[in-house]
Length: 403
Image (cartoon, rainbow, N blue to C red; front, side, top):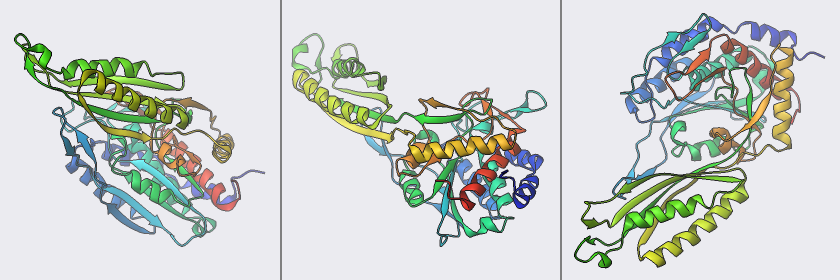
């Protein structure tokens, strides 16, 4: 039997692709790079006005404290924007969480700021795919569903954070809090391919900074009295890379520090990223990393401080999550959309949600591509297409015991 009941079909018919496109164009013209607090503030105002069409309460949540290590090895506070939250019918027995992000990877001084139509259907512009198009889909799908009486028996939270592109460090506690007890979750990152492929299982991600403190000395008169921090950091970089396995990648990315050529350097900061495929791989790496640090400290007589860790846990697909993927495919088929999926090494807020035990599909956003580059594009007809898909999936989750 078709899932497209009369009320659902009528609701989907109200989705206005042209209005959604105008919304995306307006939002994409607002620079909201993660560090652009003014631009993020403007986006939060825009979202508050747009989402006020839905019932419930809107709040702008303060970011959790975040620190980073600067080039001198000093731990400093990182400023982040406020996170948008809409809470609808919190008393409902069955509730969902829908998430997105308002920040982009393009700072206020980046040359990529304009919109450009590549053809009649493809719009090139900052954040069009990643993910202001996805934000329009959240609003359109929920607005359509609010027309259906059966939908008004369930509740939901919408969380749109301001720091996803830098790892959601200041919004991770909020994501965990809002995900707790939810029946299911949808995240509106762009599809993994222009054809609409979903991201299936995801690896995790962790970022680390190792601050090495040695001892300076004259490179000619008394070099043996020095303890070379650059050499120690380089040793760590090489040895950490050797910890890479099939289930985890290790990427030493940068070494800050050094001194004049005639000075034994007493300071260095090594930065690296890991991508574990499974939680066990991350745990093994942590143990091996600490053992390696202890070995280098003793052998080279330096001090090493650790900052950072896993920010996105791996996202395997369990039975409930697979059932949700199957539902998305089935709904897509009824709408004439061919839905497929593939595993990916990329990470997003879906990783954080899955870690709470809530089943999630995290690429429900637009079809597009070349994100994080000046060639980023969105396929405009996919706005209405994916809004219809999200509405149908959510309606089924609300009215049937799918999971």
